Length: 213
Image 1: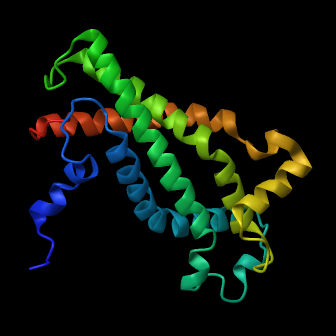
Image 2 (image 1 turned 180 degrees about the horizontal axis):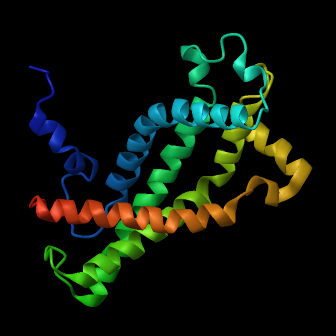
């Protein structure tokens, strides 16, 4: 009938590329897949980041109306959710595009067999691709993260929730620097954190016998 089978789901990359097989990175697969992945992740990140910010405010005794009324009911837990979804979708699309292309061209230049689990050079490539992917992620979406922070920490629940209008207001007050507040520490943290994540992921795939095409 019209039911979708597991086989059809696993063939989704073939559908997205029109059935054309290639060893090169396929943006028609990478971008929508990564964006969808980011959208799913945002449903976990939004409430957890909101709770983290609330906890920090409590520790500093900067208690605002976030602690009043219905803020921490179900809908309140997803305050800034659309901005988080946008951040993660765009950010993951950028991250995996950079990761896949840098990885592909480095392997191509070095003429390496990426399936060798003992190849230390491949670990080095993992560090570089993961680190650069993390830097690209935050360079692309840090303004959205700034807007999300403003939305989540606003004392008035009726405050502006449109991230682009929030960024426009921030830009008028503080310029580009305000939209990229905290860029330095974020980049310093992003490179090693994402490098470690990618290297661990690639090593785990190799140990499990999963080939990373």
